[in-house]
Length: 295
Picture 1 (cartoon, one colour):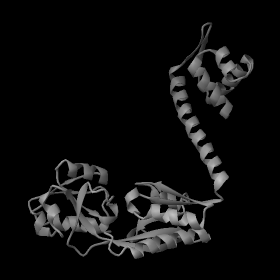
Picture 2 (picture 1 turned 120 degrees about the horizontal axis):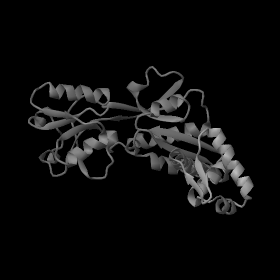
Picture 3 (picture 1 turned 90 degrees about the horizontal axis):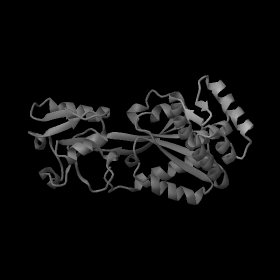
Picture 4 (picture 1 turned 90 degrees about the vertical axis):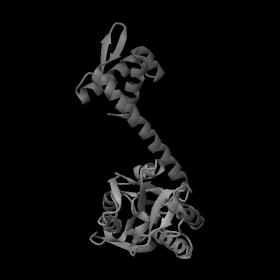
């Protein structure tokens, strides 16, 4: 299947007329018809029904063309991005993280890095579930992770970044939002949302609170759903500080516990590029200087 055949197929699905579609693609009708027939032979099903009035899509053809249209748009964007990259950059460094909030200083790090390496592009990739797999397949160069997740990973270098505490998320109108620190007793009689892929340290705290028998709970599948439930007054939740978007929508109050999260950056041990090391150093410096910043 060629890009030309894809374009011909999409154009014919739009006009449903071989002559007009061929004219719009600046080729003769016999050439156009031949390429459509080659495409149908390759996929082994009829895309267009022919008649004296022109052409019509078969049900399988309609589904196929819908897929082709999406694929053609993806290809167009890939070409455009490649053109932009080749015109300005000599190299790229991709960084995988589950959500934008996880690295609050990422935009500032990118800005500072661009001053030192203007011809190297930093490409963030937000992968809530599959970031680890992509990194291990060498699809990304840097992975934001919790240290506990990296202990058994082969062939990687781990760079300590910051320690993140546990916070209670509540509506700003909630009485708990007026407190400077939340204790276990403050949550008695409240409903706590749990689950959603919580890290090990957070699960330990959640289980300890639920075991008191004085705190209600229900499962929430992910962080976005949990925040929606908090906004709807269905309960409160505990979360790592690195998930705070600092938008002011919710109150994030430190929770009184010993557990915390060691946040790290992972790189491939055999990746010795100087720009990569420089970018890691910039991020580490930004976080080391953020002494009063809530994490």
